[in-house]
Image (cartoon, rainbow, N blue to C red; front, side, top):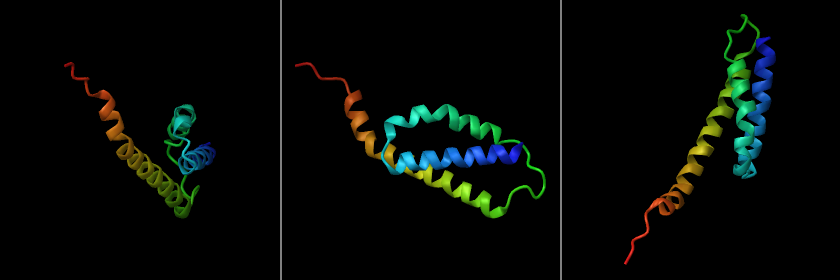
Length: 91
C-alpha cells in the first residue's frame, strides 16, 4: 500500500536525520539498503487524497536537510581526501 510505503520512507528519513545530527557518518552505509528500498517503494502513484500536502512538504524538507548536511560534510572532508590522494614526491 503506497501510504504504508510513505510511512516507511518517513521513518527511514527520521533515522537518517538522527544519524546526521549525531555525526554518525560511519553508520550511513548500513542505512543505505533500507533507505533505498523505502524510496523505491514510495515511488508508486498515490490514490487521490491519500496523503496531505503538509506531510509531503515535511518529507521534502527532511530530504532537503539531509542533502544539505551531506553536501556540507563532503566539503569538510574534501581537503582531507584530496591530501591523501596526492602522490608522494620522491627526492
